[in-house]
Length: 328
Image (cartoon, rainbow, N blue to C red; front, top):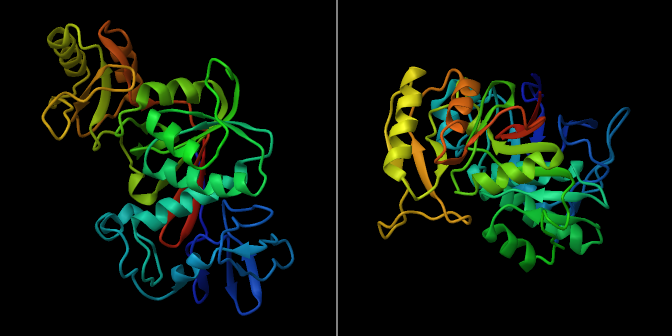
């Protein structure tokens, strides 16, 4: 797994998410954002072009001016995860106004550099994916020609509201690229997904694509999967039997934890778009995700699980200091 991150430069001012950093007139392209032009948006401001070996970034959305970093300090106002988890703590910088919503937007907008006209795109579900879809809607309004296949009814409604052309996987069975979020990103880009309840459709769409790019904020990076409860989509019929078989299979792998039936705010079982239930497995640590995936797939009542292994080829991760790219 290869990681690219230039967040350690000292004595320079950062424009978070912009794709460039500057020290005087010395501008450099930032990792993971080598795009011909930055995402254009109403109220955008001109940005100085790249120098030798740099990238011409055109216009930078004015909202990113609020994310200017200066070094030799700790990020005031950064999400709590960056203050509590040393593994994702930035090594330098001081910022105001950069929170998790801003990071999700940064990751979503950075992913646009991988979208080309004529592409057939899988549109992931979740808040970070929705940030990407909103940015994609701006590009479509400017003339970008793509067709999207949504992974949930919610995403379909959002894309429709933004006038993004949509298709179904039956009509468009081969996709160029899927861009989706994740609840956890582990070693070798193994993922836990399904916190939003769309894991079945997300996995079908992702595996119908030539490539999958996962987008997230830095709090989703983990050394071992499992702190986030693993969603397991199950058939309502025979739920008690299925739950017992999942518990037994997990125990054989040394995994213990509660298997909670996901419920709505009213206390009713949560129903997926496919009409199934979800069990959230709180194993805390899953050191052998491949083995667990294989065990779950052997249980008849399990429709799908939220372990995405060997599917994503690239992660775009937003830190308060900028964008990191991770390849498998």
